Image 1 (cartoon, rainbow, N blue to C red):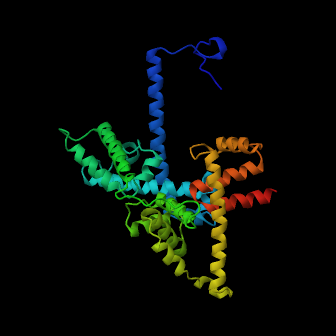
Image 2 (cartoon, rainbow, N blue to C red):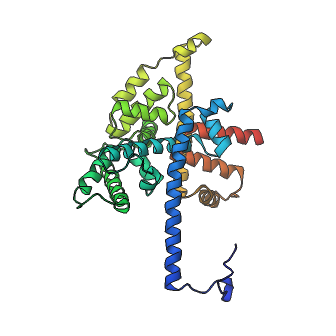
Length: 341
């Protein structure tokens, strides 16, 4: 690691303590760098959204958006879609603020909205107008129009309030099914769907949000809406209706009967459920707040394994599935692992 040659070394290879003025200057430099990173992330999200809308992967010869994002930027499909969602929400909020006279149409959105984290953007998805309304109400108490720093502070405060409101359920929730409940897995899938399509969305808005998140067939969308309703309200009616109405016209041309296809889907669900149950056990050892590397160390210690072993790597991937619900990502990892074996 390089050191500042102007700093005087002391015992142990450390440098002498900074004076108050130097410490303040360094802190201000770090704060400015963090703001710059957040603003750059906003511009990145906008660029990724343009690439998605323009279907640039087709032009560049990639088979899918996911393959393009992985090859060109080293990010997964879920990460890429989160950036698309962030750009959409950012545009909605900026448009609302412009309409309220709080932002200039020619303003730099990333500069004004650059204090928000990726998680904050996800949690206010489709609630941009609620945020803007709070900002407008509070801006009305100012003697004049808020300046840039005041507007940024108002936006951050409004976002925090909307996020807090969204985290408080309006009605008492049914207790989540226990592990012995055959629908416990479906309930967990519903919590994953709610991350993409939060509770405040209408059904039409939820469908659109889930489609963007990768639920890209009618069957996947219908199931996602059913498990989302189950996780949201505790009612199994929509889930049972989905199971009863399973239709498989796309398999008709291949000679498979409905009974065969339903059995096949049930087998896939059983495999996913087994993976999920295993992942929840691993999460007890390595909670979701840990990075993959820290999780590998924790799991290896618990099972007496090498953190670099293929077995530990598989445990980490199963754990990730229990966090994200992205079984396709787990299958792709498994296929790569088998190809290397």
